[in-house]
Length: 490
Image (cartoon, rainbow, N blue to C red; front, side, top):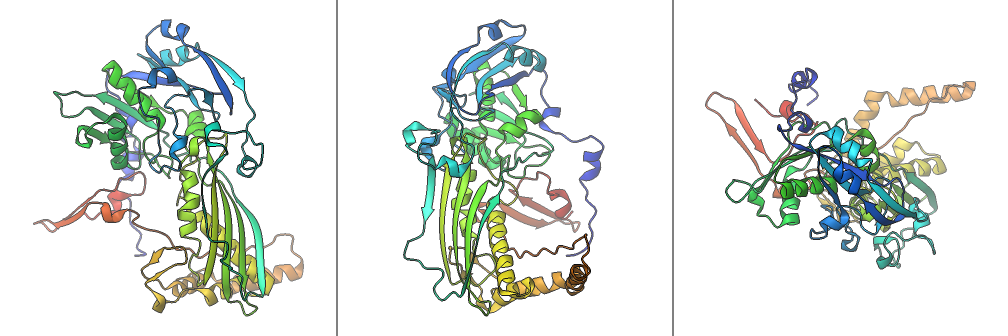
């Protein structure tokens, strides 16, 4: 701990010797290009592919009507099964970037040219891009059969009173804004069909952060035995949550390869990445924190509206799960009331980003603690220290059901303050304010506990010591930029 370690995987990557999906496309593979909606919300009329089918080097053109025999796409965390997404749009398009058609040709250039020949009839509908506006009466509906834009929700009993005994309650509306994941390498997939006389029904080379889960999804989508599906994740230029599970684009490419009996590949452009890869965050948080005048926290109420985007992307589930689970943070909070709503909007489907719902909880809670310190005239670090869970309280189950095994949060906080020179920073801040300096000194504090090894109880791991003294570590985790090679002993 605390020792600088030189990364061992960097020379290969810096010298351009990495094996990314787009670098290892087999000779003769067909190239897929998607026709995407320029409108956020519209009735989908005729999709005329005649000219595209006749274009040079085009092998196939697929639309939603060609894929009705396949199950609709469901993310690996299903928020609402009613909101399943057609692999290619049918009836309506629901966000800018929704896929309307797929063109498969012998070269990418030919596929791009032919895609421009697909003529689509759109009948524009009103868009709703704000999750709170999507809950209003009369808001345009994403899925008329659902009856509203509420995809799912959780609500604690109304008789829970988080502010009993509170002298002070601080309140805030906090926006944890939507963002694009934007990994260095976008989505990329190559599907190679197999057969009954071959080891696999399909081999999928894919840029993913969860190859095991993707294999399970592929097997379910086509009814294959998981052992007959091979997934290869070579070098991955970042995942950050956006490459979690089987994307609809992956499924279309696999189906095209299956139908045509030839390898098919697709690599996302940066424009596609920004519009179509699941976005992250996207919460509107109404937080209230109750305290006594001596600084003791008595309760927390949180009402959180999570943007699920189009088709109830699984990011909406993070509002109902991880954000709620981590709402207590590191503090002794006797009572918590949490209500969450996951809302459909005519925007890019939501997914995970860097912590997947837990940082959103920390941002809300830490902001409220700062506001409480200001209201009480207390040092923010002192207020935090006063309310931290203590080592002798572990293990414990929080008010939202999270099991904490151990912790010494005060020790970690005090060490961080010491390293930062917190007391001196506060003196400098006060001096600048007294002098009326135009350049202010801001000091931010946050104390954060994280969920680790989520699902780890189901994952494989083994360590063996070799005769020469070396150590071999076998794990089921997948490296996508975190430095696995460096962290594993050699």
